[in-house]
Image (cartoon, rainbow, N blue to C red):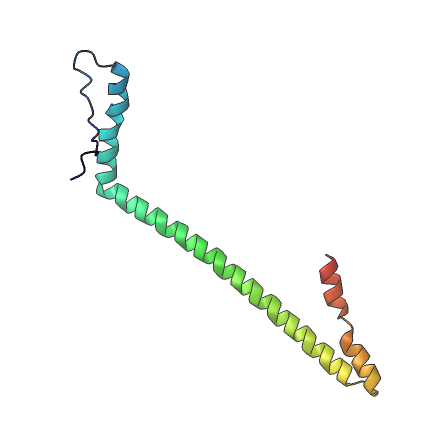
Length: 111
């Protein structure tokens, strides 16, 4: 056993020599403990926690969907550019076309 352990003892405000403000401060604690031990409070806290977690999950999923949409758009633009450049007749024209960025990508990058 550790002899350095200290315990906190709440004093009775009705004892002589005690400050009345301490009693006022401690009066709210029993009400809080009763409130936290009630079944309806626990249910309400559980429901609020569930709603907050669902909203956070919703935001994460929306971000992932948007990122997937942007990735698919970029792949489509690359595919269109590749097909457009492959349709050119000369090899140097094709190489030059493939090295140029897509005009839509440039417009989006400037915004």
